[in-house]
Every structure is written in structure tokens, then in C-alpha cells.
Length: 416
Image 1 (tube, rainbow, N blue to C red):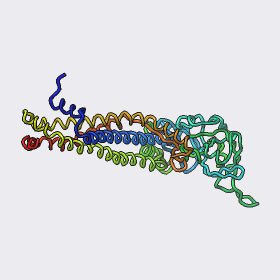
Image 2: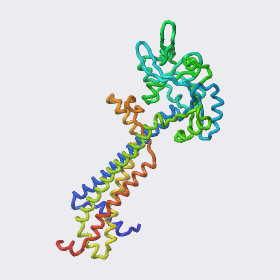
Image 3: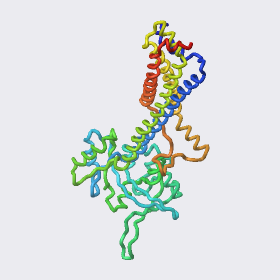
Image 4: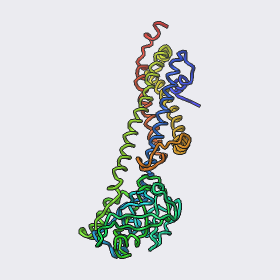
């Protein structure tokens, strides 16, 4: 197969055993350094993608994309939902009522946010069913005063299915005998595990009519409706428009950016900054090719002079060393990409095994919003990393190749 002269010589220089073994060693370390930089960049970006994905699908699948609430209890939420449903971006609607308080059991106390739902409607806007470890949402029957707790809250209270817990509301009842806190006994009918400390430790789910009685409302009255959007990034703008359309003084909107927006933005910013810092590692590895090629040029001055006397142009000499440096960059990048893809696909399982082996959790759900290391490999990230590594590798060849092209045959052969 025909190959241009500069490609033939450049690839031959890459394969050949050089007299200067130090140059060969530097060339090998440049290739390995570039491969390691690509591996690290692919793995870290995949982990950041995993955090982003888990935030959107797991955490934001449990909390409302947006809510429409009123200053007073809503009597006919179905009519309100029918008006909101006319908005194309809204995918599903479900009623809810919330109440903060304390859960107690045998002297143990846990703060809790009771979220009252209709189990049938809730499935349209929440993925809670995917995380039920024990029991099911359908056990939240009206009038039974059942509650579904996160596993962290259940463990702290020391309760299992069928146990009783006491809910203490942040209100008091005034009687002739004095003021007494409002309390109600609930039965644990389910336990869920999302993997997010905020949800597993502080969220409780009960039936709408039961919490309405706690608030001294009518059984069919609710606090508001929860909206699920086809695109969660539409929630801030569209929910505000819906509230405006329904009546500015009667309804108001809240969306996920107020509760979890800072965390989501922090993940995005960290991905960008970490990606930039890791790109510098790839750049350092790529520009090691400069030192490699400079030493190769010094080692091959005699060969360059002979090629020039045989009629090779400075452009052909320059192309020879550009090919050699590019081959180093391509091989290092491909090796790094293969290892990086394999590592990104298995990093979650590897970290889980390591945590199990040493008995220590690297991600604590009390500190982070999930308690495991996620990873999501994205093709565009792999292409971006490989593209950046190849471009930097190519740029690193320009200066040494230019120096080689300037070699004067008479000067190079003077002492040969």
C-alpha cells in the first residue's frame, strides 16, 4: 500500500529501537501520561454526570417540580387541576398537604415533614413506588392514620412495620386545664429508601384526609397541587405563569429551584471547573511530547541532513516529526479512552466493594444528597476528552517539527 514518504519515515521512527534509550523512555512516559490523563478525565466527568442524573431522576423525582398553593385550604382541587392541565408543559397533577412536626417513639424523637397524598394520584407525579422496601402506598387508607417513613427515620426511631409512632404538631390546644400539644398516633405501614439523606431521614407520607383532620379541615380540602413537567427546567417560568393566570392574589407557585436549585447549580459548576482542571493534566501530558520530539530531533540531526541532501523539503521534514508526535498522541489517547470507558462503567461497583471491604462509607447521606457513588458515561464527554487530547498532542508537535525543518545539512554533518 502506497504511503507518503513523511508518513513512512515518521511511523518508522516511532517503531524503531533508538540508540538513545532515554529518548525512548521519555516517549513511553509521554504516552502513558496522556493515557492516564484521558482515563482520569473520563471517569471524573462520568461521576459528575452520575450526580447530575441522580439529582434529576431520583431526588427531583421525589420532590415536586413545582406546586400551586393558596393562602386558604383548596376545596375543589380537581377543578383547579383541570384548569392547570390546559398548560401543555404540565404532564401530571396530584394534590398534597404538608405539616411539619416531631415523631416520637419510646423516648426517641425525630423531626419530620409529613406529606399527605392520594396514593393513586401520587404515582403520576412521584417515583416513590420504586423505592419502597417494605409495605406499599396503597396501605395509606383514609381514616387508618398510617404513615410511610424513610429507612433512616425508622432506624432512628427504632420502628418497623406495624409499630406505633406519635406525631407532635407545632400547635397547641387551649383547654380550661391549660395548653396542650396536639398529638396523634400513627401506624407505620411502609418504609422506603431513596438513598438521599434529606428524604430518607426527614420525610413521612400519610393520607390526605388523615392530615386534613389533623389540621381541622374538611376531609376533601388540600393545601395545593403538585405539578410534574415534561421538562423540569420549565418549572420556574411555567408555574409562575400558571399562578398568574389563576389569580395573583389567590394562588402562588413554588418550584424545585428554591429547594434544590443551589445544589443542582453547584453540581453543574463543579463539573465545569473540574473538567477544566483535569484538562490541564491532559495538557501537561500532551506537551511532554514537545520534550520527547526535541530530543528525537537532536538525536536524528544526521538523518535529517541526509534527507535534506537527497531532496526532501523543509515541509516534508516538518511533517515527519508531526506524524511521529501525532502517533504518540493517538495511541495514548486510544489506550486512555478504552481504559477510561471500562473504569467509568465499573467505578460504582468497585467503590461499593471497597466500602464493603473496609467498612467505611465514602459518601455519607447526612452530608451528601446521596449515599453512593453514581456514574453515567456519556458519548459526548468521551469524544470531547479524546478530541481535546488529540488537538493538544498535535499542537505539541509544531515547535519540534519546525526546529527539525530548520536544520542545516552542512552544520549537522560537520562532525559526523
